[in-house]
Image 1 (cartoon, helix red, strand yellow):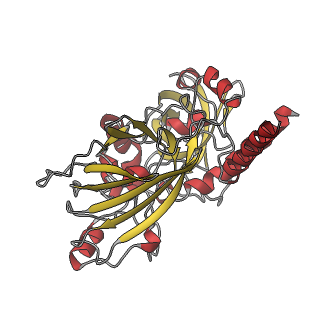
Image 2 (tube, helix red, strand yellow):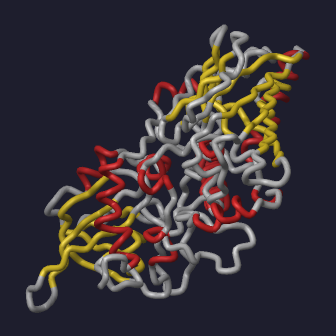
Image 3 (spheres, rainbow over the protein chains, first blue to last red):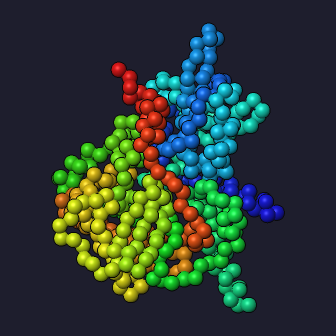
Length: 151
Length: 275
């Protein structure tokens, strides 16, 4: 029963957070095509748990063997922490060399940058449900406001 | 027994209050961030702190006190400054082209990790108040910046060199702390919308502590070089409990991190480096 209450309260918190943040987000939606969703399979090269937004870098190879390094814009450290994640945990999950599938919305400029939607590892572990980023994994879905209090 | 019942009532009201405003995790730092498990456990059973209207210490969360919905008309010089400021993370109220400012092309001082200054720093994230007999210190989580309010009876200096957080003196009028300040570095914005000010900006704030968990803040800003009338507002800040155990995050804007992010993510996503 207690657990259920906590879950409900947490759900309320999560639902309300975007409305709090809409006044103060970093305006990332402007730079990304929210109507296009990319699902990229690659290998982690670097994870940066840092302000203003965390970043996940990973290499993706095409059928000819050409390698492109992609960058995913994620939530800032405080936001990741608010979902219970720690730097140590995420550094381990996103250790260089880790095979990964990243979903997100690509930049409008065409540069290999996307706003993070979710990431799934080979063992099924997932940073998803908007915990890791503000991108969407459904075409046309709005990008949530970044939960960031800097104003 | 009645006291216990009342305590429970106050607690329940507090829970409802915080829940309704989106902070269901009552005892967690307002940034919703990590805290040590021992502190989290203590928070769950923490009582409402003792209440002294002259003790403003604690971690508070409120927001911007001046609303851009009530901004006074600007002088021609003020309008020119306003037009030159291009917000990077915020859409101005009434902006005819919402979202036209792409973060990479804005000139928000925050994007270079410049100090947010005051009162902008009051507008986002929690603030800890540290109170000593002669000085009150506001510590802002965003950027981990500080502002000093001298309460030892001194007057504002006549000839001020401007500072990002200005010069401030305060005194008590009954249960209200009245703070007068000026000498603000004009490079800072008043908020994320890019409202400007001059270094002659003068602010009068009134802080009252009407109950154990509320800090009522009102502010009147006058700056005849930029605004044709005074700009006033008020906001109720709420205390993050438990007092003494709630800690601010170390939320620096680190120039090297910002630069790396801009180089690898923000600028390429916006096509800033395209020829």
